[in-house]
Length: 218
Image (cartoon, rainbow, N blue to C red; front, side, top):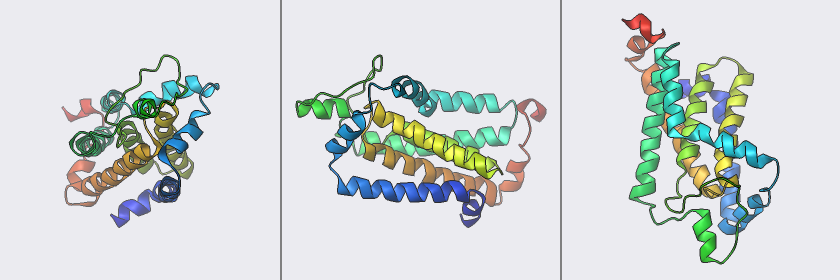
């Protein structure tokens, strides 16, 4: 685990700082008031941006991305796929097995007779809000991409991209802030564990042999 920290230190340190700040915000503010604060941004030119960037956190996008990456590097593709499937599996298990009673913002605010500003053309979900699957997927994907890169600037960009995709879920009122915070934690934690197993255990030698396009395996 320590070797993964060393290799992906910038991403992990940045995440730790933001995660601690997010927890402070969550425990010091009211969930609904915090969402209303972010909801004031809706109606700006950011509507179009966030309505498109949010799809990067979609499971279909992650799987298609991994499949395309097979044409370049099987090892990286399998790493991304395994990190996503395991972290997303845990998130979905929590979402449907333990927190199925947590409603999405649009329904939660309807119970309080409060209207939200919504982005035109976005279909809003109403149930299973906690944790955010898109935030999990985004942080899992960009954790891996940062892990693969040796360029510090790229690692920072990967972190900012993960934050942007996760925040899009709050901006679009698909999730509360606490949902994306929990989802991001799942993405980072389980991707960290998977990378440690794949790259820092006895199986690393065999796994390293997959650093080639898929067509070279046959």
